[in-house]
Length: 571
Ligand code: DON
Image 1 (spheres, protein in one colour):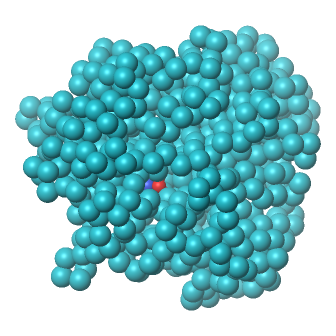
Image 2 (cartoon, rainbow, N blue to C red):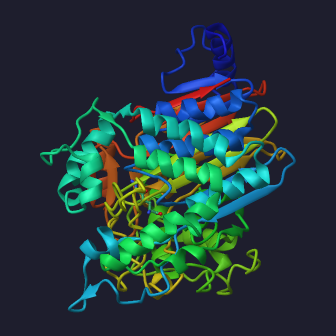
């Protein structure tokens, strides 16, 4: 660990560099932030961050650290992510090469367009809970590939310490306990899930109680030994396939064997001289973070009064999400226009934004070109891990089982919570999903298709092409707006990184036509936005962003979401 004095010195440098001036007594480094010289990890859970730092201490690089943290989250933060879910991994290697690893779930071969309709209406219970909600998980394949292409250690080295925690048990934190309490009724429907996560009398484990997961530990150790084949072609796939057959599910052993990891071509845009590298479809994150920033580039955001700035940014979000609903889907199945991130298109959208009133956006825009994104290789709950090292490896992993505890299904003997990512498809054009997102045919269900995602792992380079920041978030569609806001706060408002994450958030996703805005904004700003015509929903703190930034002296400043009890730590 770096010394306290060293941390302070670098913190002053950070403040000066980001434009706050050389304060005579700098604010202490907040508890959710840390500075390190050799490497840095930020996650939503201290045990996972510590696992990442331990990987660095073993001689691993940022990729080893990020994967170790991610698989540990699957043990200690299973409501958000785990081996039963999917992920997107963005890596910028020390030599400048970039990997975008798509470990998104795939629909089973027997899935069909209308599988969640009953009497012509979408039934969210079917797509969010139980056997039909589950897509074939991709995280195991993605972690294995990330380590193979850019890590130094093995998957076993990442998994075994996490298995130790699963075996030993850990005290569940407040957010785990709250989510468990909120979902215990649904969890109780699945005997194995109930046995592991609830007391014998059906009440949920409480904050501070110990959760021991021997079956999960066994699965981790078996994958450590047998690699991803244990999961996709071996006993895990067999156990899930048999359970699905007996319980009305569609996922089969063949679906597991047919899981395809995809290496994608990232979406790259620029924002005021910075290069922003984002994740392409089937994430909508890269496209719409880029689109929102491209629209904002047409305004002098840093000089706008707060109400006007929030208004303009919310309008940019609204326009981007209107396009998301219409155009986005799995690029292996549907063409997604590359023009969504076109600067001229953004300029045209920006010209529609009025500074004095809200814009009616009845439908999507018309980006140039409707060809598929050209050369892809061949073609409520989530988590983000940020990691970086002094060699110049930068990592952003966003991973999820979708809503809290995914489908709520744990197949006996596996310990693994299975996702409900099928709910991210559009069950029917215009029918909202768990995040009130709507989509159309492009995101309709089809066999072996990937559901559209908002996960936005992002890496930013400075004007010299050097890594500047890695950032990502959890929170459904607010992921996109959280990431865009951090970038704008950082680049337009010259916030220090902790302040960029702390600054009050807001979110507009076109449908519903509502500006969701944190209650920490001043009354004056809220009234001003209402006067401009925004239908406001004033909300409690939202989001979970993790970020790391390179300081001028080369050290790394990590910040974990200030609204939660995560941790950034380094060496
Ligand atoms: O991929 C997606 O966009 C969603 N499944 C993410 C879910 C999520 O972020 C839930 N978090 N609060």
